[in-house]
Length: 449
Image 1 (tube, rainbow, N blue to C red):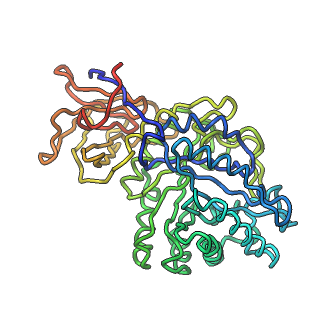
Image 2 (image 1 turned 180 degrees about the horizontal axis):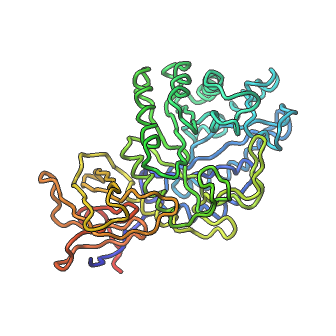
Image 3 (image 1 turned 120 degrees about the horizontal axis):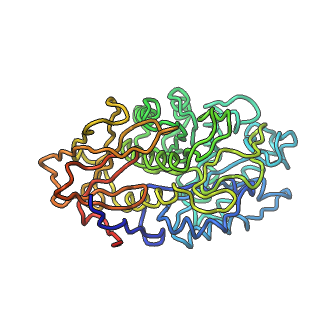
């Protein structure tokens, strides 16, 4: 293969839109330094950014609100061309004296007394008023189907619906055009069904499924949004968008971690997971893939309801000590640019078949065909397991559909951004364990090396 250049990437200010987002979560608990992140993320071409609002950090004296800490984040993101959206939560020890942690993480105001509920309503109203000219999307609570973030009592779809209805109504009383949503981590069909069964059609506009499954292509991982779409459509919520609003894979896991019990990991495997997730979410009809998170949370202990992690898994695209970019930073920069502006699914552009031996002769090839700004593209890769996988570089045949034959095809490596053309000496195209993009040469701009 002949190297012809490297994908020319644009900053967030230069891109109109992208399906790829990132999380600046946990600043409500002051767990990282966002000033060290803004320029680096702005250079990626990322657009949507998930931000947690932090009642406890905003109201430290009853009835007095200080949004200056959140203003700084919102304004810095917007200045660099990004589009922050809010996850609204958590509790406040001022009104929850039994809170099991210092910032009332996971403590639900509708489960407390009348003073607490009134204080929550007043806070949400003040927050929306303050940010109504800058924030359009408001997601109510974080992962309410997990005991880590729902206290006191057991997670309940009916109680969650009550929280969504009440909080969303307060937001829209100030900003009638606001888009209201909510998220779930496990996304079990029965829980999804029961939440939406207790909501009216004008009370929710987006639903966010969180995804940390270590094997992106496994059956449940791929089907959960299919189930959700059917449930929503059957209940009359056709207008509700489905997002992957939080998810990721760590470059390092502590021993005993739920997603990697043996511990460890690598920057390469993290980048492989993130690249596959971006294109699988496009294939599954999701409008957004938001990666958790911008930087490893290693500066302070991370509190859940009743659990404190001194060194959580390294989920960041930046190193938690040095704030230097990891391998996934470059990979997501490439993905954000390829999935920028107009992208819509099309029928398979080609059939991809491995030649000779692969890691396993039965390893499936995953393909995702789409139009980028009117030009056909296809992402393709070998779907080997991510955890513990070795780097793959094998030959493959790409047989194009007669109706969509490319005249001057090239392949772009999503990990590095390098673009290659096939020469007379090349008997096949390459295939790897992460997405390569097969497209016309003039679909994207390249920097000549």
